[in-house]
Length: 135
Image (cartoon, rainbow, N blue to C red; front, side, top):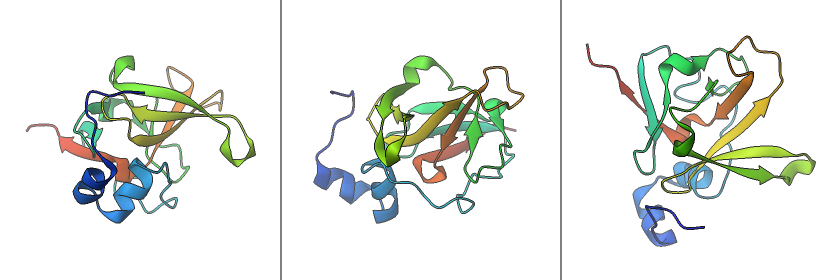
Protein backbone atom coordinates (compact mmCIF):
# COMPACT_ATOMS: atom_id res chain seq x y z
CA UNK A 1 0.00 0.00 0.00
CA UNK A 2 1.32 3.45 -0.78
CA UNK A 3 0.63 6.64 1.13
CA UNK A 4 1.05 10.35 0.45
CA UNK A 5 3.68 10.45 3.21
CA UNK A 6 6.18 7.62 3.11
CA UNK A 7 9.34 7.42 5.18
CA UNK A 8 11.92 4.78 5.84
CA UNK A 9 11.85 2.88 9.09
CA UNK A 10 14.92 4.84 10.20
CA UNK A 11 13.20 8.16 9.45
CA UNK A 12 10.12 7.16 11.50
CA UNK A 13 12.34 6.04 14.39
CA UNK A 14 14.16 9.38 14.30
CA UNK A 15 10.89 11.36 14.29
CA UNK A 16 8.94 9.38 16.90
CA UNK A 17 9.65 8.42 20.50
CA UNK A 18 10.04 4.66 21.10
CA UNK A 19 6.51 4.50 22.59
CA UNK A 20 5.01 6.45 19.65
CA UNK A 21 6.86 4.23 17.18
CA UNK A 22 5.60 1.04 18.87
CA UNK A 23 1.97 2.12 18.47
CA UNK A 24 1.99 4.16 15.26
CA UNK A 25 4.36 2.05 13.16
CA UNK A 26 4.12 -1.40 14.79
CA UNK A 27 0.37 -1.41 15.57
CA UNK A 28 0.90 -1.62 19.30
CA UNK A 29 -1.59 -0.50 21.93
CA UNK A 30 -1.02 1.77 24.89
CA UNK A 31 -2.28 0.54 28.25
CA UNK A 32 -5.90 1.49 29.06
CA UNK A 33 -6.50 4.56 31.18
CA UNK A 34 -3.05 6.10 30.80
CA UNK A 35 -3.44 8.07 27.57
CA UNK A 36 -3.14 11.83 27.44
CA UNK A 37 -6.58 12.27 25.81
CA UNK A 38 -8.65 9.53 27.45
CA UNK A 39 -10.69 11.94 29.57
CA UNK A 40 -9.97 15.23 27.77
CA UNK A 41 -12.96 17.53 27.23
CA UNK A 42 -11.00 20.24 25.37
CA UNK A 43 -12.67 21.39 22.16
CA UNK A 44 -10.55 21.06 19.05
CA UNK A 45 -9.28 18.75 16.33
CA UNK A 46 -7.27 15.58 16.83
CA UNK A 47 -4.58 14.95 14.22
CA UNK A 48 -2.26 12.07 13.45
CA UNK A 49 0.81 12.45 15.67
CA UNK A 50 3.04 11.12 12.87
CA UNK A 51 1.95 13.35 9.97
CA UNK A 52 -0.54 15.98 11.17
CA UNK A 53 -3.50 14.70 9.13
CA UNK A 54 -6.69 15.97 10.82
CA UNK A 55 -8.68 12.91 11.88
CA UNK A 56 -11.30 13.52 14.59
CA UNK A 57 -13.22 16.43 16.07
CA UNK A 58 -13.88 16.84 19.78
CA UNK A 59 -17.55 17.10 18.73
CA UNK A 60 -17.56 13.35 18.01
CA UNK A 61 -15.64 12.35 21.16
CA UNK A 62 -17.67 10.57 23.83
CA UNK A 63 -17.18 8.83 27.17
CA UNK A 64 -17.13 5.11 26.47
CA UNK A 65 -15.31 4.23 29.73
CA UNK A 66 -13.17 1.74 27.80
CA UNK A 67 -9.81 3.25 28.78
CA UNK A 68 -9.02 4.93 25.45
CA UNK A 69 -10.37 8.03 23.69
CA UNK A 70 -13.52 7.18 21.73
CA UNK A 71 -15.14 8.93 18.77
CA UNK A 72 -18.29 8.05 16.85
CA UNK A 73 -16.93 9.13 13.45
CA UNK A 74 -13.84 10.58 11.76
CA UNK A 75 -13.83 14.10 10.29
CA UNK A 76 -14.27 12.48 6.86
CA UNK A 77 -14.09 8.92 5.63
CA UNK A 78 -11.10 9.68 3.40
CA UNK A 79 -9.03 10.64 6.49
CA UNK A 80 -8.81 7.05 7.74
CA UNK A 81 -8.19 3.64 6.26
CA UNK A 82 -9.79 0.40 7.43
CA UNK A 83 -7.90 -2.89 7.56
CA UNK A 84 -9.30 -6.26 8.64
CA UNK A 85 -7.38 -7.40 11.72
CA UNK A 86 -7.57 -11.06 12.73
CA UNK A 87 -4.85 -10.98 15.38
CA UNK A 88 -5.67 -11.96 18.94
CA UNK A 89 -8.07 -14.67 17.72
CA UNK A 90 -10.91 -12.34 16.73
CA UNK A 91 -12.07 -10.24 13.80
CA UNK A 92 -11.56 -6.53 14.34
CA UNK A 93 -11.25 -3.53 12.06
CA UNK A 94 -8.00 -1.61 12.40
CA UNK A 95 -8.07 2.15 11.78
CA UNK A 96 -5.03 3.76 10.16
CA UNK A 97 -4.20 7.27 9.05
CA UNK A 98 -4.95 7.43 5.32
CA UNK A 99 -2.10 9.91 4.74
CA UNK A 100 0.84 8.04 6.31
CA UNK A 101 -0.48 4.58 7.21
CA UNK A 102 0.09 4.95 10.95
CA UNK A 103 -1.91 2.72 13.29
CA UNK A 104 -4.52 4.64 15.28
CA UNK A 105 -6.64 1.95 16.92
CA UNK A 106 -9.80 -0.01 16.02
CA UNK A 107 -13.45 0.69 15.24
CA UNK A 108 -16.26 -1.34 16.76
CA UNK A 109 -19.97 -1.45 15.90
CA UNK A 110 -23.16 -2.48 17.63
CA UNK A 111 -22.04 -2.00 21.21
CA UNK A 112 -25.14 -0.05 22.19
CA UNK A 113 -23.62 3.38 22.81
CA UNK A 114 -26.11 6.19 22.28
CA UNK A 115 -24.17 7.73 19.42
CA UNK A 116 -25.48 8.71 15.96
CA UNK A 117 -23.42 6.03 14.19
CA UNK A 118 -23.45 3.14 16.70
CA UNK A 119 -19.69 3.03 16.17
CA UNK A 120 -16.80 3.45 18.61
CA UNK A 121 -13.46 4.48 17.17
CA UNK A 122 -11.21 3.30 20.00
CA UNK A 123 -8.05 5.32 19.37
CA UNK A 124 -4.71 5.36 21.16
CA UNK A 125 -3.96 8.77 22.68
CA UNK A 126 -0.33 8.41 21.67
CA UNK A 127 -1.45 8.26 18.01
CA UNK A 128 -3.03 11.70 18.26
CA UNK A 129 -2.15 15.34 18.79
CA UNK A 130 -4.89 17.76 19.91
CA UNK A 131 -5.08 21.24 18.42
CA UNK A 132 -7.40 23.18 20.76
CA UNK A 133 -10.07 25.36 19.18
CA UNK A 134 -9.23 29.06 19.01
CA UNK A 135 -10.76 31.23 21.68
